[in-house]
Image (cartoon, rainbow, N blue to C red):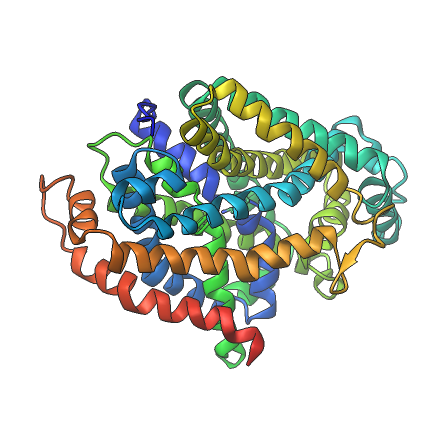
Length: 455
Ligand code: PHE
């Protein structure tokens, strides 16, 4: 087993890279939709509780395993407990999960790059009438841009190639440098959108919807949704945090890092709510749908037509999305890259090419899920939706459950303590609560999420 000496170069860089992974389309376009369905800010509260109570402790557990292992996610299990080989299966599952997520996430990243391109070129707004609603027009555009063969495939390949470029440049010069530039830019862009949205006429109504909790909508399923959202938005169960933590220096404080990363992730979700809800209510588009693709590709472009310089706003928005998506896909493809390097002793170059070429082909095929290959379904779901469902509802929770059981019960007790206190350099008041959560609370709740579709 090779020892991995790669490390992030600075504290700010390692935080930027980890935040870059966590802040993705999960926070930006999944969150407002799930929040709307589950009672606005009541869901926000549920989500924040899930992040604090479970998200941060599980994140600390992933960091601890990663930094103790100092290798890829499969190797980490083997190194920490050489005699408990079967547990490495949890690592294998994480690698598989991350690779499958990469397949469809690259397609979405491609869409965001395509919309960025079409906004910059002005094509997105070429046919708007400016008299009354252009919702129908944007639906037609969405069809042209993401429900045909050629363009989505081209832009999926573009996104995957950019992703590959970053991986080839390496952890310090690629991932860390990219994150150092793009993450501050993402927050600036989001800040600008918050200001614009808050100054729209009638913004307060949207804010009220988002911030005035409707507890009558909070049911058991809201909690399950909050838990799922917390895990996805913090990139848990994908092997990413284990892999990245292997690049953390020995002096990095894991709990503090987890709190910073989780705070940034929650902050982005809240800021996104502040952008979306006033914008949508201000133009009377709430009933029109703020779910998923409709929100991003139809409702928001419609909002932009009401603003002067629509193309500029639209370009900025899709740049924001593309940044969020790219820094996430980079992190998820790093999981298998590191694995190929450390398991097979390959050079980084060879590992990146061997991973990305098949991925480019697979995501290219997946990009046809809404066009030529829409007949290819499993359980009524096209390829894209099937991968999403399989990973989010089954593979991610199982991998997280395995990880909690492993760190809580199987790995040597001192692993978590040593990593949380940097080998006893300071005391950690949170050690006991984190251990209890990892051992009991998290496994029980994750198991509930897993079985909930069947009861
Ligand atoms: N936290 C990420 C998000 O919100 C999850 C993710 C990471 C998804 C990497 C895909 C790839 O989007």
